[in-house]
Image (cartoon, rainbow, N blue to C red):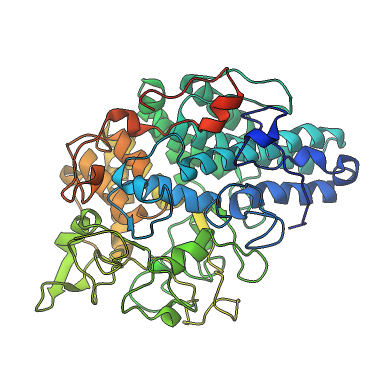
Length: 534
């Protein structure tokens, strides 16, 4: 990916000339020499790489220095690391012992409008909108060609993906589709939904067919997959259920050349763990990953991404070398809420009652020296099972390319086929049409890979699908959204340790289904109104 140097300006979603008013500020791609960057298709492709890099990396010189966003630790500000913190740490899937300001508040669901992590996520996504708006405008200066049309469609997908997340996390945000200096009005969640839907429908035939694009770039199946996710959550976003469309577009993806990885390269009995190894771009997992962030331990270094997901989950008696890195950060582990999803798959326990063997290979918990119950979160890594899902080794056990053991080679799936299988199943059981037998077959294909017991059509209920999503997709940035869709995120119908800040968990106010708009944005743009409750 070509390296561009950008100047620090304010976010397109805040829009003001008073940059000193902001504690955090993304960069504006409009400020480099556009005549050079958009002079040829090859140069435009380099600019397109920056759009993808905007979600994977954090600055202009590697893991730290010349950060894109100021006011927060650069490694913290990486997109997928914040997605994990906002969508997994806020749920039953994770706790963290670190005391960085604003971080403990995420699991206890006590965040406020000045929270560093929610604010930085808003700016990170705003930056991506800025990047994509600039690219879409400037690539129009090139002569029309199939290649240029594909570049533009990819940029529109990335903009739609950014807006999908803004809508999911923050609800009502400004809708800006071009570079401007005017302060924007606030758009409703319905408006954002319609924009994302319309964009994806319009570009679906402009994107290259499934698996015909370069590795790491999106294709037609990615648009269908994101539409399936969008429609699955439509009732939350718009008040109108659209499970029929979720089924329709999931079905389109299922019928492409993407396939569930069953290649057991390391011979451990399952092809599931290969999805999260250092060679998941070549070991078979690439056929399941529809949209991903590409990482390389030498050439795309960040303290976010999968580097974070490997290091931060190692502590206690765990041997970091076995996971392809030089040490653990002793931070994140899981709660019994996730462990209980696998309880029926335990085949053997030790004298202390801890599992020795799981019948479901997706239960990749590390239990040696770890407590099932969490007595305290802060600085106590051994409270709660560890979960080393991401391992910076290849199928032969060799570590990633960074010989120092600092940075990961694992590519991170943002959308993979297994999710789409479960979207189809959920849409079917929630009255969206489709075929029940097909839904059962798709779920059983996932369970077969995991070595789990197959289910019958009578067992395929909505709650079963939610639990199966937890088993299959944990720590992949979807859990909060799933729980909200089922009415279980803030309510008392489902509790987990330290939900709401109490050891046994408690319900919290429903306004926490969405995050607050950042204080700094509201200070600058008086057209915006804070989300209720904050």
